[in-house]
Length: 202
Ligand code: GAR
Image (cartoon, rainbow, N blue to C red; front, side, top):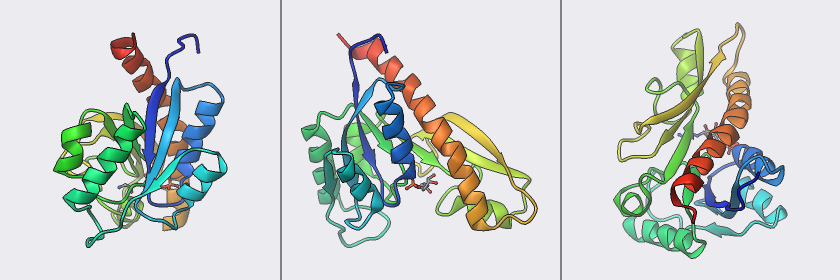
């Protein structure tokens, strides 16, 4: 990578962290002009935290709060504080299972991307691969989009299509979608980071 500027990206996840690993691999191979400045989870048991610790990347765990699907404003304030402490420039949601609301969006809207396991706008919400299988569609996929106040409804950046095959189970289909995610996310982040550097790096 010829440009010496690296974009500080924070990765947020709640689960096993396979997308995080695909991004960390691209960073370590020099394929992505970025530095993962912090990994944040809402789940202290999440494998993503264990994997980040093993790679020597700083981690933070948010208080779980009263609600399962979103964070109270004081927890979003804490999240924003952590992201600023690590000089975050781009926030990358990789299996972060809480809806982000106003307190967070006021600070990071326009600088936050998400990956969703369907061809949005089809199958918004949780376990989108199951919904696609149950709907008997011929194909599904994954979508990378900007995060906005409409859940899974922000502007689409890129999509990758995945066939649904005879005999697919929710697990086999999700595994095939995840392969596509692991290819697409690092490529899209590379383009976003290069754009960022062009616009903002001195
Ligand atoms: C990914 O398949 C991602 O698309 C999905 O969670 C999984 C996380 O896997 N995200 C959503 O469903 C968000 N609505 P990972 O922890 O192995 O990266």
